Length: 268
Length: 268
Picture 1 (cartoon, rainbow over the protein chains, first blue to last red):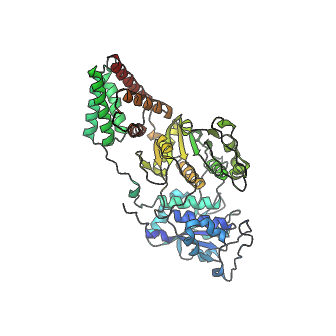
Picture 2 (cartoon, chains in turn yellow, red):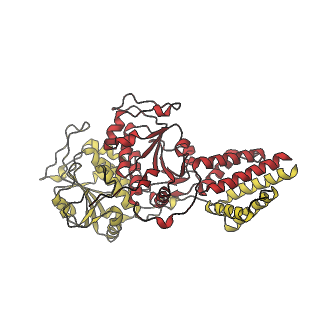
Picture 3 (cartoon, rainbow over the protein chains, first blue to last red):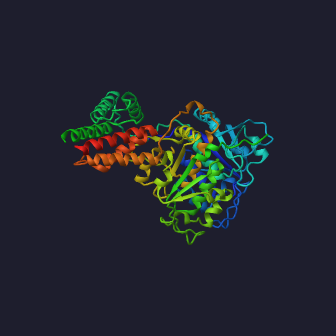
């Protein structure tokens, strides 16, 4: 069966990472995005730290944002999503990143003194997808790993999005937050997943009821209904089979079994 | 404003990791779980590999599963979710892990020759939460990082769950898969499911597999397997029963029927 195509409007959805510290997170974000059909990554003033794999992190120069290159660590974590990194835009300010967008969602982890309404990803995604489908540019904005988004950065966005979880313990790192958001977005895209469906030969109503009648006969021949409520038992069995999404092969096996039992009971 | 309380039925949801290789993934899974209000972790025959942080990984001994201890690396990655690791159960087989469950969902990444229906987390979560709310035990089962779940392990489960994404590129590692599943579960908590609840005494994994063994015996006694593929037939029957949401009364009827048949076949 042909693989379905990703809808092109997914290209109108931008993942914006601001002032990211860890090179690995940028790579992981790219992988998380591509896994969920997203391709547009924007980096705002990345502020890379030293890591074991990246002892000399490239320094971002606000006067020359396009000169910034990511270290190898980012590409390693990106795995087969190198292309997302290669095509990523790098800008100096969040305002530049959001310039062409109509919807911009700041991911925030806690209630702050902010006036925009707070939404869950589940709630907000439909409007994001509708906007993207109408060729509008939308952005999901993530802050620095340690400090999140600043108040000013949050206020540049016209939506607030928060991932709900355990009120007593909430530890979701940047890569995971990006993964969850991308998962939520894709989960609401109606891409036909028909290629995942299985080829089943479901038995029809008539085949099932014939099989159940056959079972009733065998049970009767065996004396199973002596001192039992035949009607009630058969109703339970019929209901059980109705829940079981029987295939024609299941019917064949069961009826073959009933026949075999019947022969054994009679032949002796 | 008082912090909301996590509903206690979340404790009826078990995250099962089978044959996990990387100690860090076990820690990350614990953190992902606790972040989404889940506390019950089960490790099945962990097969830890050497890592830079864990040069001498503890070896799991099937004869003494409770003696297994996690390396420090797992605890480091678990961060503030140490308690989940400390309370994790360790068992030798998936059957043990699933014994008391009524719903067990195998996470699979691709179509396989399997007969159980394939669901997204979005679709399956309501029934998982309803079951948990009715004090049933439910499990989400994840396989080894490289190989996933074996066919046999998948067949022990009565549901298949798959996370949809980009058909051309899908790279979700174990920790992220656990995070996404836990996120989906939590995202549907507090949606009132009262209208979906049913008064059912669902049979658990152990009761069902005992009944299927009993059926196998009867079929064998009847000579039903002569010139048939016993393994294949029993797999189809087991899968059929797994779809059927059997109640304890269904089990009683079926086993009563098998006993009756057996007597009739032998007494002559």
